[in-house]
Image (cartoon, rainbow, N blue to C red; front, side, top):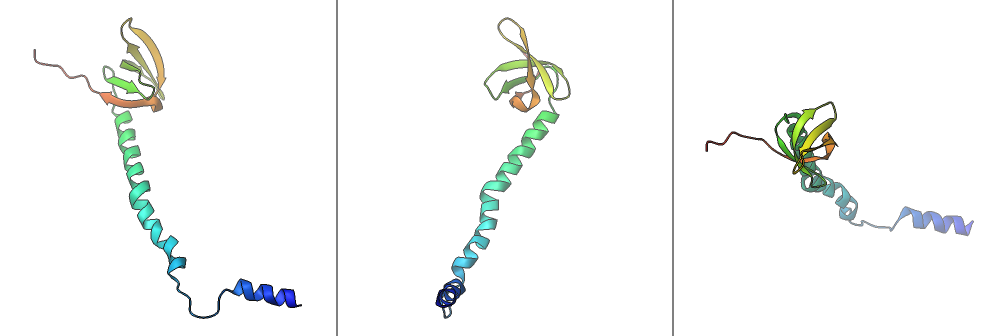
Length: 108
C-alpha cells in the first residue's frame, strides 16, 4: 500500500505553483518551425512544379544527376533529351529535372 501511495505522489508532480512556461514552449515553437522550415520548402516545391509544367521541346535542362541536354519530346512523366557531343538520346524522369533554360533566339 505504501508503494502505491508514493507512486501516486510522484506521478502527480511537485506540489505548489510551478511555472507553466516549460510546458508551453513546444506550443510556441510550432509556428516558428513552420515559418523557418516548412513554408520555404513548400514554396520551393510549388516553384519546381510550375517549372515542370512549363517545359517544352527545345528547352535546355539539367538533371539532378548533372546531365545537361535539350528536350526532344515530352510524355506523361518522362522526357527524352538529346545529349552532346554525339546527340545521344536519353529517357529521363520528369522528377529528375533540376533546372530549365529556355532556348531564346539571339539576334546575332
